[in-house]
Length: 313
Length: 287
Image 1 (tube, each protein chain N blue to C red):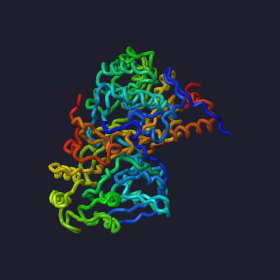
Image 2: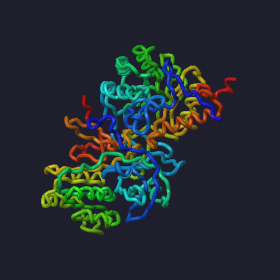
Image 3: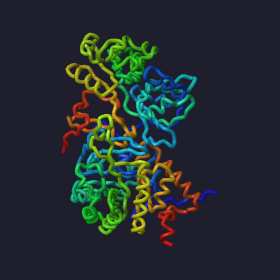
Image 4: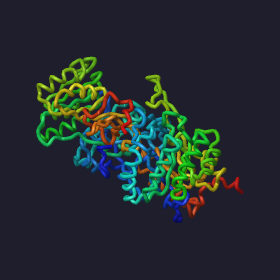
């Protein structure tokens, strides 16, 4: 009785066969997970945010498990854009995976430089502009907490690759007026939004009586933040119903993914769930397919934002 | 990054169910035997297993990593894996409370294994606390290569020494140290390490235990030709290389320090390459 569901989705002009993606920073560059499922079987691999230069990240301890969640304080450790484009992207394309490259910069110029480098590589589906990593030394660097800085970063990226690659701006939930920030980056040229990055948090070790993480603060992820994600997606979809959203935050089942889609997500990234279950993406994808079918949706697109229907009526 | 070879990460790892065959208290620890099937054929001393804990509705979302103590391909269970677990936190306590017949979700084998010499050598195995667990499986393998295997075990108290009777048979000698003197000699495993290394012409030290012990061994043998293979312990979120939390500062061949994942480039590392003094810090950024 279950009908086949058209799971395909789009973000800007990029098409994906399914809406389940990895989340940036939770899949490295895909090799580690490829032992557990073929990377081409999921919607896309969103790679770990890469910067211009190789980066060590923050000191250990970098992790603290919390009730139904975890704090991380990695600090954008990575190989730098040149090594990444030379080694990781070609490997992913060989696997026939769809690739969304996530970039992060310390300055507005660095983002534009990173975007320019992406132009030299063919086969990338979209660029995620991570302006919301909480694990940087200077909280002033969290561009996504400042409407003007957010706009200027996206404007710089748009001038470099606008029209060539869909630009997905990744935003922080740690702001007072998320729809305002979202509207600003869309006006500046973002084709889609990624919601949400981790929520800034802290754990104090009661034995040492000091902050547990080497970086003191960290980003909270996992099921604990799912309601925050649902709220953020719902608010932004209500304000900007035409702008596609890559939703994420605590998704660990098909039901969770469906919830984000009902709130307004056109695609859903799975992050922390992969830490506990390396095959989480394929499990979630199959569960989502079954739920959509059971609820009578012939296409995924019909379900996007479906929770808003009374207000729109 | 230097040790990372494309396509080889987690290459033998599988995610599957395992059944608890037995769960016994041994001193301060639990000896847990799992029926895991054919995956034992891929397990090597030093590898670890990552186990989902707490059941389906658990608030504990991360796997727990345990060194594989030993594996056996015996006919009764097809393939079994032994773990020695200290009931420290809520995850390991849950595991230690599992009755026989329980089903758990495992990912194994993970991480690097101890390097096994091709020629007979004089090996010294050093374990701290439950860190001794994988050393007995290692000793078995070394004996098949005709190595001479001496072992030193240390812990704070006697109840935290793990030295099973059958394990003692696979070593030529076993010396035990406890900090309170309640078992063996009073003191630490590093007490007369250099003398032992010299007197017994030790070629390779294999160690597993607390980071402080691994560091102390590395520093003691730095003036000798002894190779020190240590299994490190860093807190991990994923165990498969995607979370970047378990990193350690390691020097590569070019003298550059990079933050290396102890789950896929470890847990077994060459102790002399670990920048122990930088653990918990961030090395200078190289250009």
